[in-house]
Image 1 (cartoon, rainbow, N blue to C red):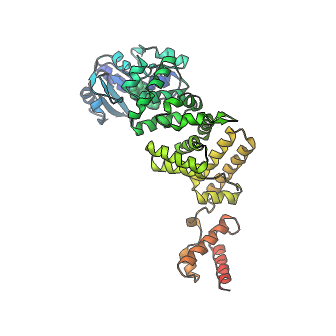
Image 2: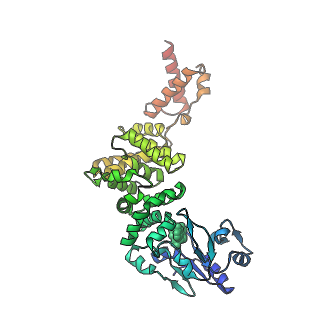
Image 3: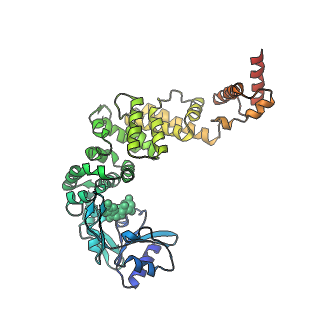
Length: 424
Ligand code: ATP
Ligand code: MG
């Protein structure tokens, strides 16, 4: 099993001093799947102060030391080293009241959420897999460690993590885990919006989102109560509106506001304005940051762009912003593809290519990009004030339409013409 040098060095240092140490959790899962882990977490029986002493020569991060975690920087990378733990009682369906250190990796694995996440590995001892994680990984099965209802009652966030792992990896939650996810879903109301968003965004970005966020719409209902109602509305192309929304959200890509706009653009059956408002409410409840919320809102509210010519797209960019205009075209394209309208999808692919070209060539798409400014017009004898603003606006319109070149010379000439015309 491949472990990067900087991680292997940390394991060796711990073992050379007589401690047990393993890589554990997500990095073991991902490596066994042939994926590159985001990061490597290490579990050890060394206590946090012992870890600190052992890595005295290194930069360390102690923000998580209360929970037994010390970060050690080796090779420019932070590796989190956490002392084996067994969690005590849980409070508020989220946090263990007390954390007890343990001498055994098995204890530490027993408190983890799913069997595929409850494996440890070390080059000296090999794979530690007391809950059949390897078998479940091979079978593509998501199974809670221990008694699922108890595990989800302890910490309800695990339910949403389950939806995320299904959506990202395509793991099928086994029947008992599935039942418990449904049975305990109401406990999600105790989980903070911030934690919910992390998992929700992760799930929405997964390649299996359409399948599993649809299947678990009732699990997600405490988070977004509108989802089950969307599934009850038929859609000719995809079966129902939730399936359609998820298909679009999967196809449309990043950033997250684009996926959220796709998920919520038909959340209210009455129409665009109502859906935009409902989406904004949902995202406010989820405490989504303002930029994400506003971007999704504006995209949902924006009518289908009628003019996809170069000037038309320039106008769209000028009205929205480069990122929102490109987002809108992507959303419309993914939406057309989900509705099996190949012709419309192609039209938007062409429009996206045009938008790329407009942005790459530096076409003038904002007043600030106009090669003439208020001062130049004042020099031409236009008095400062409303009239000047109107004149700039006129010039900008003509440049957007491609009727006027965006050069100081052409703009000044045209401005003089317009001034002369208005003085007649
Ligand atoms: P990712 O690839 O998204 O990082 P991960 O499985 O590594 O997935 P982390 O949140 O980084 O997830 O957590 C690391 C490990 O800690 C998990 O693999 C799991 O073993 C354990 N874990 C994390 N959160 C929980 C939880 N809420 N309950 C139980 N175990 C958890
Ligand atoms: Mg991780």
